[in-house]
Image (tube, rainbow, N blue to C red):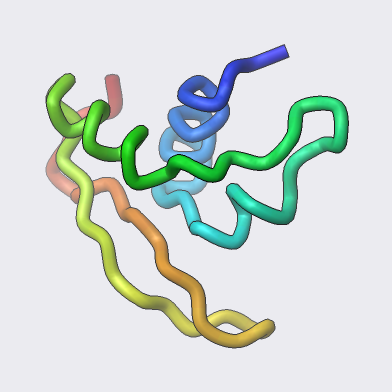
Amino acid sequence: MLNQKERVIHQLKTRGFVSRNWCIYYQPRSEGGITRLGALITNLKKEGWILEGRSAKTKWGKDFCYYVEEQQTLL
């Protein structure tokens, strides 16, 4: 089982972004949601990740996402 930080990093590496709604709603019940995404993003930036946050339209409405900058080599 991955911890919250590991789940966020996995999303960033596999999809290139992580969304607020994914963190809250789309987690297995056994692992629970990720409610401190902003704090995790701050810590990742301190570790050298280059991330940009912005609103995004989805098929369900609006969401807030953090995107990996294109020029960054994933850690």
